[in-house]
Length: 117
Image (cartoon, rainbow, N blue to C red; front, side, top):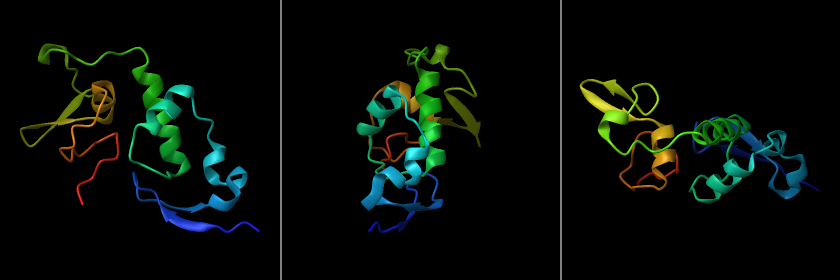
């Protein structure tokens, strides 16, 4: 018999049912992940995610497919790689994904799921 478990998505904090004992009937199987999204998620610290966040990772990895990490400050695009907030530059999830690894600095939009204790 399968047992549902109520979880909070580590990325968006949405509550969802995780059917870990019957994965074929879990909400996560409603999203078909691309091979790029699967490969990326294996490198992260997210664990179990809601179906909306899984779909978001499909979108991000698809978007990143034809983009490169901006090697110079002049190639950063506002709204794509960063946005401004109170005279500060805040890097987006896409920027961090294109970077290729987690810097472990507790970034606001860490796409790798790193959060300091």
